[in-house]
Length: 259
Image (cartoon, rainbow, N blue to C red; front, side, top):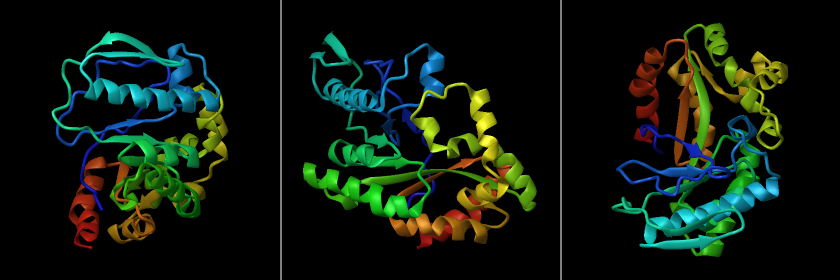
């Protein structure tokens, strides 16, 4: 279990793809996903159907790999094409490529084509009974060992000795807890915030890592470790982020690393 690396998580290659990007450095991975309207539509792009977004994701993945591994690339797909394209700064070693998603289709694609799967799905039963089996099926199809795939959870966290302050500091994540926003054309952050008012503080406390002590955080995180995540990315949304980092580094991370 990895509780210490720092990452930039996921890019969306659906509408804008920079074929000359992504030179490699140590401790870098590239995560890609289907995107969300909040980012894509507000950048002047049309929001495609889920089927098209998945097709774009798969095609972009194929093109990225070609640019990383081949000298001169000519490619024409359904959504992207390049002519005599060369990535001059190629990775010195393969960059881990992760696919992000909330559903079985993306999880299966990650098992087939990537080195890992990133999700912010927090329902243990969905993870155990749907996402990870789909990831394993993708790995089986491609001849990979499922156990060697990275499984990364993205989850907001907020620490304060006063639980009310910890909850108040994490409320802005409410919109991300309505999964429909990731699929439909809901791009206006004002409307997302308005609709997110239905998410109560009790739900935030139950679903996210809101904690007033190291023991409380360890208890909340343990179920995700036990289900099989290899890395957990905590988005520090605490009132005092330095205090949160301190308790994580001194008590929470050592607990899991010792295990």
